[in-house]
Amino acid sequence: MVVAKTYLLTLGDIDNVASIKVDVYGSLALTGHGHSTDKALLLGLEGHEPGTIDPSIIDQRCAAIKSSGLINLFGQKEVPFLMADHMLFHMEKLLPHHSNGLCFPATSADGAKIAS
Image 1: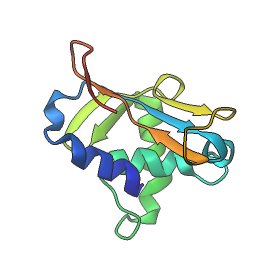
Image 2: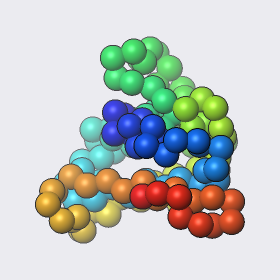
Image 3: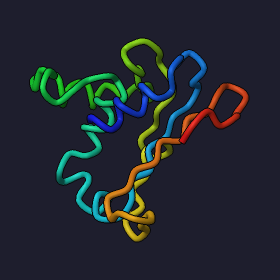
Image 4: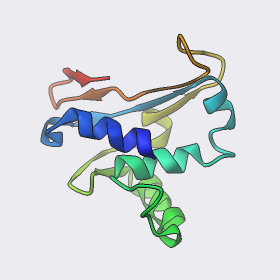
């Protein structure tokens, strides 16, 4: 949750973001669903933090994202987010330097890479 929110902070103006993906690698991908990594990443992208989120909204909000196909970045901008296309678990691939890796490619409406 923290890393997803921190990444959004590095983007600056999220109005330019038309699409965001989350690539989860290695052991983090292997344990991701069982340890609710998917939920934490979704909620972090929406601007929530572990210490302040109301636990009673977690399952409801994640279900809403999954059913609507939309995520509300920082609670300010909705962008398409289909779990099968936008959150990929690469269980057999490791990133250099650490077995728990994440990438967050963000693109603009014209498909240009904003950051990753």
